[in-house]
Length: 114
Length: 114
Image 1 (tube, rainbow over the protein chains, first blue to last red):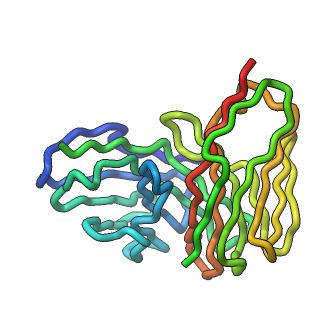
Image 2 (cartoon, one colour):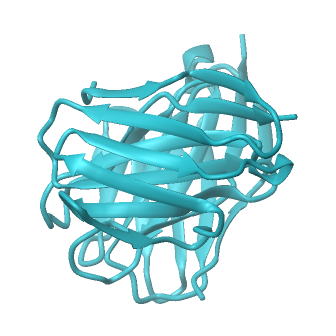
């Protein structure tokens, strides 16, 4: 299995509080991604990173920010959590631009916003 | 905008049967197509990746085909086993250099009955 660790694995918090999810990889891969998975919508890309301090938006980036200060860590922050951000969040990684290289996923963080 | 559809949403078959899962996409300009497996409470595991220039890929009892012109892919599972029970997702990669921007279908939940 690819060395991807997400923390925390579960979190319950209240509306309006800040939340930070962490993704840590041991593969030294260049690209890292944050997805959310919701019933009826499947997985959708929130943000991704193509290098240290290099990030870009995905299709559902509103209300989220990211940071990558080290190759191995990619943080997802909800500045002021809302109930609509209750979801399962997945981190993924991929190597340099190889057409035949799949993405590898972490086990996810289940986040509940009450 | 690329859209990916998987039909059926759920499938239940007896052990030993051969089965086919379907994936369709609206834009034939893809970089590659990936099939993933997701077990409950877990992340995604890559099963097969078909590059845009390929027609099919095989791994053990799994065979995936790709027809870009018709916007379709199928995942064939031979001699199904209870351990094959999981949700199967397909994802297409947009033809953009660098990061793998994947667009996912909503998955087919497969149950193999002993």
